[in-house]
Image 1 (cartoon, rainbow, N blue to C red):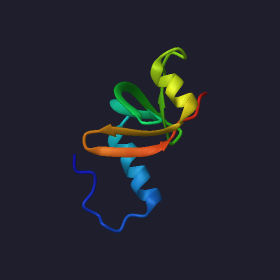
Image 2: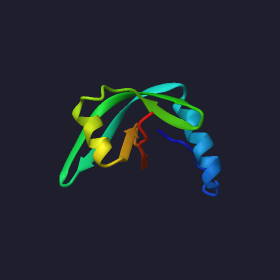
Image 3: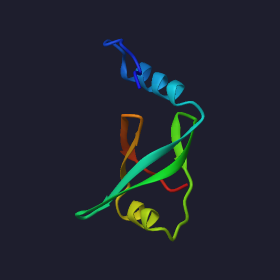
Length: 88
């Protein structure tokens, strides 16, 4: 996916463009890790309030990993986003 040919976007402009291109929802790959164990799985994501939201069961392994290490990477269509997950 070609997000922009503009090379001089500010960070805020790039974030706004990213959310506009992603739309309302996507199935994204979510990567989590604890110690040396890394896992990737698909999650259904919603985009609003300038955030990426996904829902999962508190007993799933990905959730337990997020409690131990909230650092994540998400990917869709060649776009990778790195950040910190928060349990809401």
